[in-house]
Length: 149
Image (tube, rainbow, N blue to C red):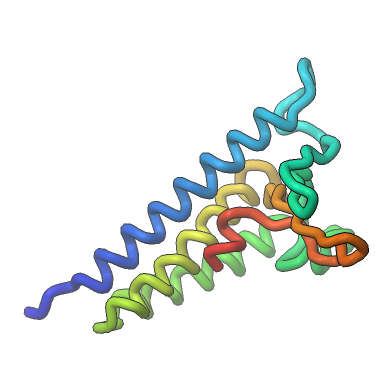
């Protein structure tokens, strides 16, 4: 029986990303929530961190980059798709003999799990990192899970 190092490594990376993602979202939700506001909080104003970087709370009910955010699709559809993709990636991870591929799959799996937790918990994904350069402000807000994916 050969060692399952890529599988173990990928699972550890996935767990680390999911934990970092959820911890960062918890911190942002606490920081951006106005005193006395309900949890989860409604949209809060941006927090300027640098001339090109803000923390801005956005509830993404759609898919990547806010696509289908306003269409009103049931949250369970996106959650089921994310779950199916995660299972497929876990099966791939279980078969890979390559360490780098194990790490890469772990990053994507951890990001998918982090966003799936949001969908199940809030009915939307918490996005908060907003990068902009002058008039070039077309990039949507994202989070740690999105960065890993």
